Each structure stands twice: as structure tokens, then as C-alpha cells.
Length: 117
Length: 111
Image (cartoon, rainbow over all chains, first blue to last red; front, side):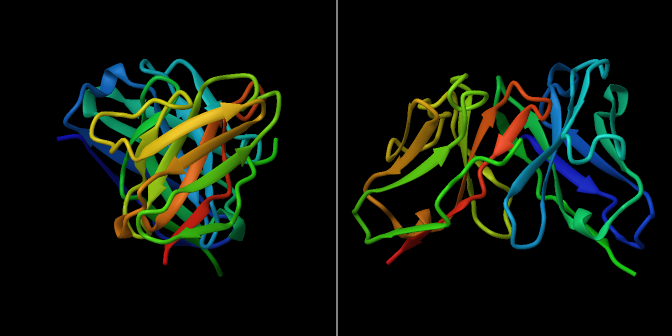
């Protein structure tokens, strides 16, 4: 059974940083592109970043580029997202998502990041 | 780039059909057949519904169908059922620097 389990979401002050993690199981993690997608309260989905199988190709949404970094550890079947200089508008549920061929074929349950003083 | 444009809500009675539009541009929806759709029941993980405009993953009922014309893609739900009440999102690959664009989401209400 495919599982993606996110963790690391917390309440953080504006300007702070945090690292989200995603533990993958039930499939060959090292064979898949992976993405982070977020959903702010009451808003729609927003693609954040993705990374290729070997971690050598990273892509970021324009709105976040420069403040985030995606990475992976295939030995640990884990995906990560580092968020820096956090703002109130970064408050969202962050989903770890597996890529199919030009689509997103499996989603985790999400981890909640709240940016507030 | 802007998000893709979807209607905020659509509704229909059980057994009826509803169609959700998703309008983009010549840089995304109009340029590629990499349009996908996702069903999201609040509090749960989004579910993969349609890929490459009109293809259904294994296990998705054939009540769900997709199409595209120009810069607009559409999702049609035929034979609406109570469990179809959810939020639906379209997504397209884009040749802009933000590679993936989602629509704002459409809430489907079963009357």
C-alpha cells in the first residue's frame, strides 16, 4: 500500500524557519519525481516545488523561489521541504505528493504550518 | 503565472450531469495535453481523478470524464451521486517558470 506521511508542521513566528518531512512507503521511492503542494485556509491548491529521482533537478514556484529548498534522501525514502523567512501567507496545509507521468497520482494527508506571532 | 480559472461552485441533483470548466492560456492548458483533475473531500487527501485530459486511472468510475478545447479543459460528472459532493481541482503543466498550475477549485453540491 502506497503511503506518504508528512510531519514537521508547527506554529512558527513570522521570519522563522522550519523543515517538513515526508516518509514514503509501499512503492519504489527512488524511481519517482516528488512534489510539495500546499493549501492555505479557504484557498485552492498551490504547487510549491518538485524534485527528480536523484535529487539533481529541483523546480520551484515563482511565489516561493528563494525562500524554500526541496531535497530527498532515497536511502531513507524521505522527502523534505525547508521553508525560510516565513510569512503569514505561508500558513497552509502542506501535502507531499508523488508524481505520475505529468500528473500527481498519490497524495499524503498533509502537515499544517501556521505562521503567527 | 496566474492560477487556472474554475467556477467557484456547481450543483446538480442525483443522477444529473455537471460540468466544471478550467480555463488557462496558450502556455499551459492550450499548449499541453497534461491536464489532470483531482477530487478533494475536506479533511482527506486529494484523489487523482483524470490525467492527460481524458484518461482515468484504474479504479475511477467512468462517470468521470474529461475533455479539452483550446485553452479550456472540462470535467463532467455523469449520474451524479451523493459521494461526489467534494471540491474538484484542475491542474496543468505550464511552460512558465512555475511548472504546475492549479485551478482555484470548484465545490460540487449534490442537491
